[in-house]
Length: 189
Image (cartoon, rainbow, N blue to C red):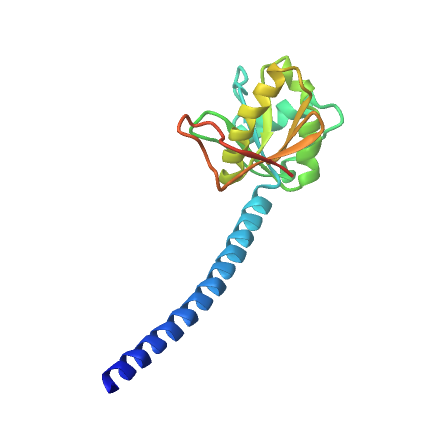
């Protein structure tokens, strides 16, 4: 009988330890989720003033620096913009050939983005610099967007949100992708 009571005691101890660890796991998951949210916020804020410029060729003759090339191009194309060197934190060409422009102010970035029609004739396009997670979500939403466009529905993609016919669609992270690489499930928000 004492052996059975000893085993029961061990079992109760193991159950108590298991419950403690389960509670600790819940707290740890919550802390991890909050930390991930904070990291995404910091990454997003760091890219809030960035622009990616595609298909901007070099002038002939080329200017001494890429910064001067970009400044001259933007200032000649957007009449309302008088971008000064001090408003550009950094500018460099990425491996893909696109140019990453880091500005001092998000308002300047927004003025440039709203003037997108000024660049279309040159074949130049510009997009905000999104964090990797948001780029992945947008690539999945673009598949649905293209299908909606083919069906003649009005669409608008803003950040990681897709509006189709006035309905908000968001990518369901948990379902990820189907075998073919297409989004499996979208939720109406």
